[in-house]
Length: 511
Image (tube, rainbow, N blue to C red; front, side, top):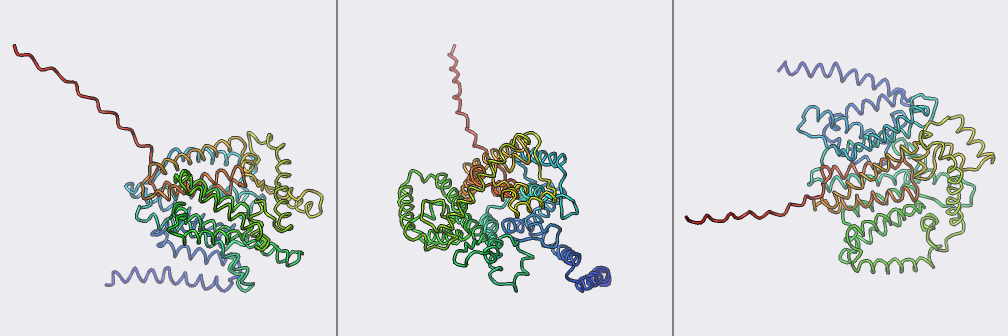
């Protein structure tokens, strides 16, 4: 009995009591950053047993969740911390037990390695990483950190297979965690008493609300854009498409699914983003074709329904909230003049910026500009914009926000970066298609949606709005999740050779 009592006493007196004393001292000054960091570190240590057992489920749940790790420098997103932890645990498990396996798809790994090499070499020759949160005098390292975490997240997701029996739960964890994107908007609506919760949720989603509330515009012309509702609506519709498919949502036997999808689409339009409707439309259209529904009567029914819906919008569009009108501004509708001006202004703003940027592209074709930013240049540009000395898009250009997918990789990383990225996209689309065609039939809808979603994101990246460092985690998560569901890439089934008829040997004639 005493043999078991001694280790317990050592644990209490050697670990628990000193830890309690340290926490008591730290909590006496709870407002300092160091105190918050110590408390956060203790929480992480206490959560180690949970991470060891549920690290992969936590990774899935955190990927689309709008949560930040406030006690770490730079306040990274929760999915970044979970990616590093999950990948580390998986690698240690593989080193201890080689039978556990560590999935690797060379056709995806090699373009990722090439892309990372281009990013790091460019950073080496263009000012380094520049992490301001770590004491650097330069900005821009956060974007490189996003790229590194996207790669780590891909390997963390794809390194092990999700059992077929748990595929539905894993799919739900991945997509439904995006509903947390609504919380920043709801916290802002709740009032200052709840704003302390912005320590856990990014305030950027509520920025447009605050701008409208404190702007000089009249209260009856405010276009309140609920950004988080758009992100949450897209995540929820993605889950519905991956679980039920287009055929079930449009089925007359399940009218509730279509009604729920329409309600989600309306709530998602409260963000005022035209891109949300276009993106969901691409998801829907590509999956409609992938499911083989083009040659069915659903095509005619869907076309007539869209025409009737457009006709119903014509007399009622100005009665809709201004944010919803802005989401529909890409259609030829008679929307509010203020909303129309805002939508047209954003398009003209982008076109003018791209015209100014195009002559600079040849300078960075072989060695990109990188992400390193001088804070003095940013400050001076910002002041010049305020004083009207330069165009307002000059501030976005100085910060490296080009609002264009091709320019967001061509200028920072040149032709090598573009080549590596296109190689990665082609290899990923091929892997997604092979799993869609040859994967387990039980994963048919999930594989179909992941393929459709990836292709839609690629189209929108190059022809709509794209940002390399922020879109790369999306691409990496889709291909990583697909590999995890399928346990790799299912090649086309080999065609069995036709049987060769046996040669008949003539019987020997009797002598």
